[in-house]
Image 1 (cartoon, rainbow over the protein chains, first blue to last red):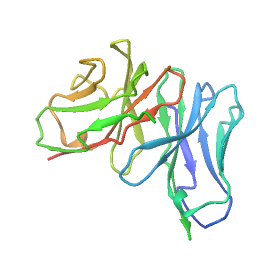
Image 2 (image 1 turned 90 degrees about the horizontal axis):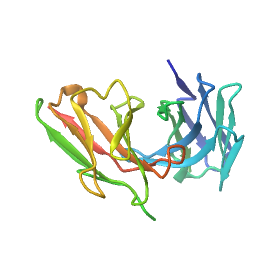
Image 3 (image 1 turned 135 degrees about the vertical axis):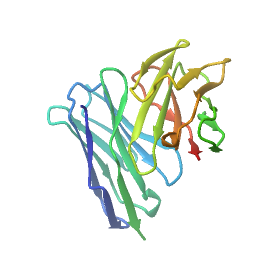
Length: 111
Length: 113
């Protein structure tokens, strides 16, 4: 059964720090991988999508990398701000075009 | 910016009742999806829909569930006879093609009593 693991489950850092969120997956035959943000009681906002042929994607202060051979993806957040506080979810699309989700990392940025 | 909308935002129903959750995907998108998230658990795929038929469905999506695109804008999820364990946040999503970014609605929180 395909699994997605996100480490750490929760992270609290002071404002301004750079940080890395980790995602590992068991199925190397992924179609793509997406990182999402979820605010409490709210919907899911797509942050970055990396196709299986790509190694990384960048958007503003966010950079996501993908290493299919090791089954890992990282989300790098530069110069963190209190507004970055949210739960960050990674999900990969399998060969049946279904998104398989991790449990998320709950991030708190302290002012 | 175009967005996916969902109604209602919250719904409370009695066990055994039928519920219909509604979604309006982004207008030029061709693929539509339903996901659910039970409180404190992972998001789970339910079903994908393309060209007026189901493309893929998970084992969760049993005979109690159905989807429909009744007109050119709405995409609905029907649960025929709700169970307590159907209580969850239900998310609709859409994408232009199968491999592109999926855009999610704000969700409908369903509570079955």
